[in-house]
Image (tube, rainbow, N blue to C red; front, side, top):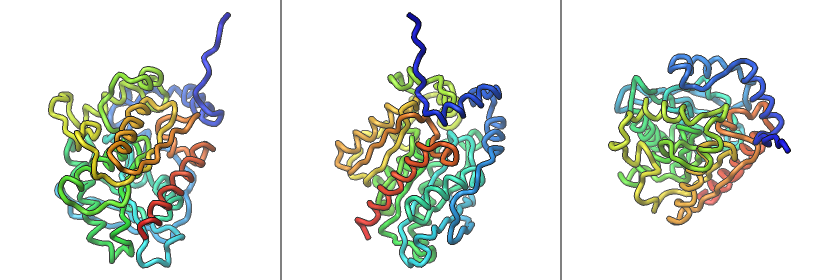
Length: 319
């Protein structure tokens, strides 16, 4: 008897998949760097939540000026010492901007009730490792040093990011620990890119995902880190860290049908074993990048709300 393979997607995600297939949308690596960038920047997203203020700043970083955009949600508009998240957008280290991730920044700021500092780090292949990592760390230090001016509590500054940005957030937490840098209240990792592709069950099952393929992962990692993994370190590839002790609490979220799922969950389990309070959330029916689908996917809305509540609760513990 013939059996049809059950789709891993929620119905609203299935509709996105169907439309992409009908439009002939293929893997990122087949589009090239400029094609991938143009595709991401051309997506029209409905406006996100209104903010009390949105202001642009420029940080003097180790590789030149770094633009950042600071979102102050209504919930903390009257607070002189709000919590804050230094946020690194996704895009595989090769694409993404303050414009294309404006909606996600607003959603995260609104859900967490935290001031969000969105960092426009330099991209590969023009700027390879460790440029983005250095700029992520510089943004954390600037936020801490600018706490009074920004109206935030220096004791309640977290780091976070989605996809490649989640990897930058994890690396920044490691570097702050190792270099005695600013204290980090928590790390918020949405389906983070923590390692080069490995042969894991989730990679075998979902490595041909319409949202991220195994070949895409190899392509983007090589563009930022280089093709020879023998030179990788724990900041470029956080999963290589020998120890995850003395790291901040974490909220980690990943979709069931994400090829990165098993590596993400292994990292979360290691954080727990090392003593960091870690909320590890797996969402059915969605894949990689689901937080960018809040406007059209019910599960994404629920996930961002749940992550936001957990982040807000953690900040409240240190108020």
